[in-house]
Image (cartoon, rainbow, N blue to C red; front, side, top):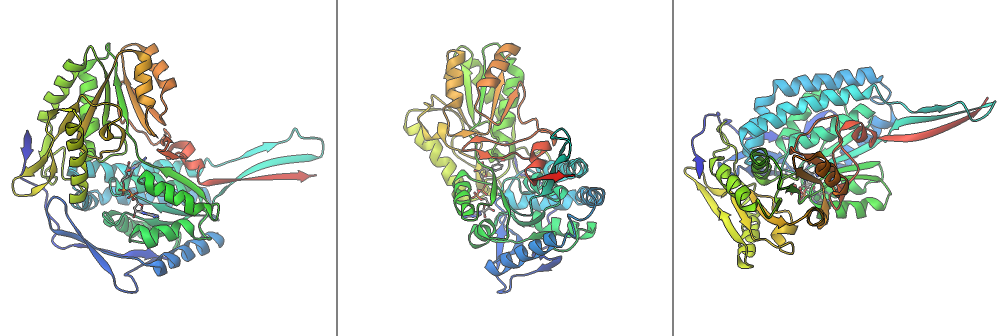
Length: 494
Ligand code: NAD
């Protein structure tokens, strides 16, 4: 295996102090509670974050409610709102390295990917800014001689934004600028494991001139902070990215007040490789898709469905490429796969692999904990498991690690059936040189995104989201923006 233990990126001298940002002011919790985030790769305390209680969540919701109701944000012209969002985008770019270093140390992901995630998020802010000025409804002047109808678009109101640890800054940027562009006010709760880049964004929002109370940030745990954000009467919408289990809890509790819920949840994403596929590109994409973000990615292509005639050849290619992938110290720009987020999660990954092997699956590569000299063993080997049957947990559940499972198929219908044999429906991939095969597959696949002869190609313009238990609603693009808008009809006798 290709393991890199040295590092060239400078470590921060002191832990970052992450604080709540409520009504334009940075504060610690009233009871002074804080939690240390210990780096999964380096074992040092990276940040000390305030741990919020219901009091902070309540104060943040009140601030967002007041800011929405008095129109200090929605009452601005879309042009003025866009100017603030564009300023935030500039500040994100200026702060890319500071954001990336802390993102890597809190999550374990490689620094090159943190730089892409944090700096690249500026594009989402600029795109959302451009959408602010496109919000419009309809007019109906064919209803009769003396009657006029109009459909107006209005911001939905106060939006709670709850985010996970795997792409803290990117996922926040898929939601927050779009909600702000629509004229909403927000309360954000990042994951307790990766609070810092969200807290740093608070500094940038303030510097960019976002009026106080328009975006509030409360740090802390799912309970009580996340649960209050999804049940409180003064919240009009919850947008959540995270596990399907928590997504279901939020849907139930938000139902009490019938607030709108948008969910981006888990996936068990297949890439289907037909016998006529261009195998070099497919093998490259599969290798990237399984190891990106240490495999801890909702879009991980963790389930390969390959035609039986080419399975041996294809797996050999992916094994060879996997041996070249650089595992190791996430604070080196050449590292491609870093540390696993927590020791508990590493044990879960290992359990899926061991159970599959016990049930008769075969390891083509890896299958165990990886030690990186000088950093310890919160890493996992690149792992490829074949001989997997569709009923095994490793083929059905999100493993969320650098683990690829391989299933085989004989014909088109079986490939589609295996693809759709999942409670999830986030994304799917198809590889074939025959455009008819690709299109026919894309139409049958139960997935919010179908990638054809590519994988994880994302653009702010193209909506993203899941079917089935992968979620509801869409993010980014025009469809994502529209989620934050309410429709009001106006009928006028004249
Ligand atoms: P998680 O569900 O454990 O936590 C997500 C967030 O919800 C955290 O901020 C957490 O504190 C909060 N939370 C926990 N319990 C809550 C409750 N009862 N009420 C309100 N909030 C609560 O998820 P995670 O482990 O942080 O992230 C990994 C999961 O996220 C994976 O399943 C992954 O597939 C999914 N994910 C999906 C997408 C997507 O776009 N579809 C993107 C990234 C991650």
